[in-house]
Image (cartoon, rainbow, N blue to C red; front, side, top):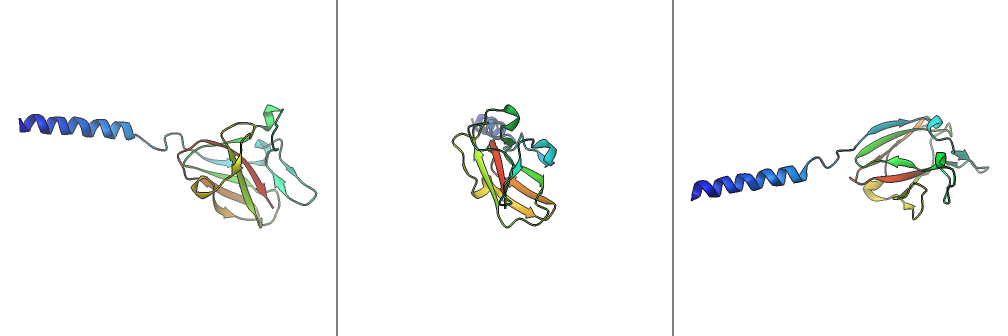
Length: 133
């Protein structure tokens, strides 16, 4: 009987290890040049926005895919270190029902005069709108 108990425990361990898998299976580290953001704009106040607020009617302006466990390096159009980096996240491509990214779903890793690097440290897929001021 102990041999069967050992075999059963081994099978359960194998099932648990398979079920857990890679928590970040669809992660990507990506450089995002301004040319990948055709609807970005700088307001008269000098605030840069990567995408428009909803409603988004042009599919070229859908918010950027923001994969879980991923790092994104954006080209900084301001030409100076931004004083404020804000991200809005949504489960919808057009940004409906968005909220300000917080906690480990929107982590600012570095902001320089040429780039802004952010990370989605959760294993959750979002769509992203980035604001630099």
